[in-house]
Every structure is written in structure tokens, then in C-alpha cells.
Image (cartoon, rainbow, N blue to C red; front, side, top):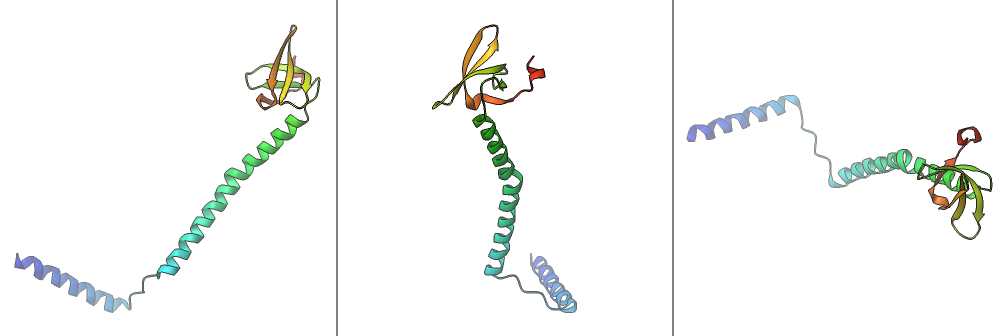
Length: 124
């Protein structure tokens, strides 16, 4: 068992002589420096998260909200259920519109379920 201890001691001496030949060992960064480096990395990640995910989603929501607010009678729309029809009546004060699906069939739909406007040639 004693031969293992002497080998480890010899390895430690060899490592010490190698570091002396290579020059002084740089000091480990302090706690404050490490904290600041971590904060910089976290702030970069938050910035990228905002630029790549949150900002485009907000733009999409804003564009959809403008489209929903500008709906008027006669607009061809696509509902979330996949129905294409024309707006027959916009109910003011409520979040509802009456959509004419054709053939005398009219349904009441929430504005939020309207996906987008459809060009007249697609609706026919």
C-alpha cells in the first residue's frame, strides 16, 4: 500500500516542477467577476429571447387585433373552424359578428375566432 502513496507524491512533485517551468499560474476569477460574467450572459440570453420570440409575437397580435377591429359588413373572412363566409352584421358592444356562410345559413362567431380576411376570388 505504501508504494501507491509514494507514486502519488512523485506525481505531485512532477506537476509542481512542470508549473514552475511554465510560469506562474493565473489566479482564479473572484466571486464578483464571476457573478458579472454570469449576469452578462443571462442578459444576452434575455435580449435574444425578446428579439426572436416575444417581439415578433407581439407584432402578429397587433396586426390581428387591427384586422379584427376593422371588420365590416361584406368582408369575406375565414373562421377558426375553417368556414369561409361574408360578414352579415357586426354586433357593436359585443365581441361577436354574424357570418353568412351561404345558402341562407348564418352563424354568430366571436371576433377572436376569425383568422383572417379572404380575397373575394378565394371565397367563391
